[in-house]
Length: 107
Image 1 (cartoon, rainbow, N blue to C red):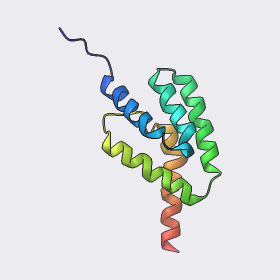
Image 2 (cartoon, rainbow, N blue to C red):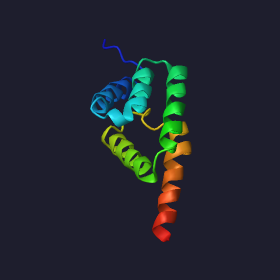
Image 3 (tube, helix red, strand yellow):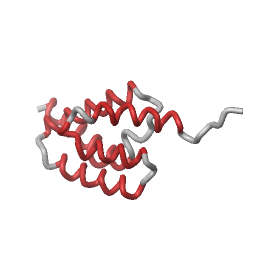
Image 4 (cartoon, rainbow, N blue to C red):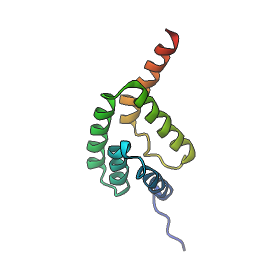
């Protein structure tokens, strides 16, 4: 009988995304988050993610939008990976970016 691991597809997909991140030096902290999460080090991963969010939130809106577009595309192409956009990232970076983009468009 073949063993099934909980969330195996998610962690295998996360490894694919980590490989893509290795060529993007501007996403180093996010890459560190993914690698740490893949190793099941949840608390450490969240600490890294918070640092990434803080760092990226100081960047220009265009850089934040570029990351949001990139991570959303990865999420759509790797739907089995549930850790690409954790709630913390969604609430503190992605949703505020969409709000700013909408306001910018309506001006």
